[in-house]
Image: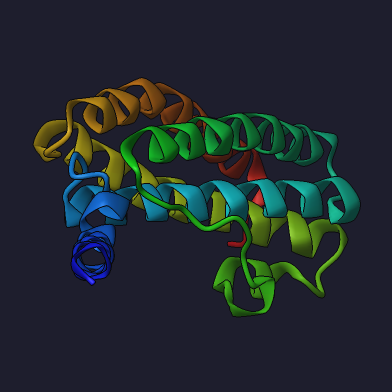
Length: 173
């Protein structure tokens, strides 16, 4: 009887503590939200990069799409590994029907696609850079701050490539 009481008490303790252990304790809610946003951004950018491969008319746009696929797939793996290390979770898929940049590009082809893709790439990377800079400067977890700082040059490169394409006249007037 006493063993059953001890075992019941231990099980109750374990169940009560599970949410604490699952949080990992080293990533604040803000840091966890950043990791989630980073993963979603990576999946979205890789997805629209693939769309550029299939729907763009200009080779430079297709090339940028390929760069987005490679870099954001690699980054998604890094953010996922970081999340696992910290006991956090990140999404492992996106509902493309609910992601505005993807919806806006779905039915476009050729030059119309090229213009919209470049606009979306500029907008998306500007938002991501702002979030990564904020995390880099004000994040709570040193590993997440380091990740954000390391990733910024790649995001800035994507933004500059997109802006260069826009200057070349591949954007809407």
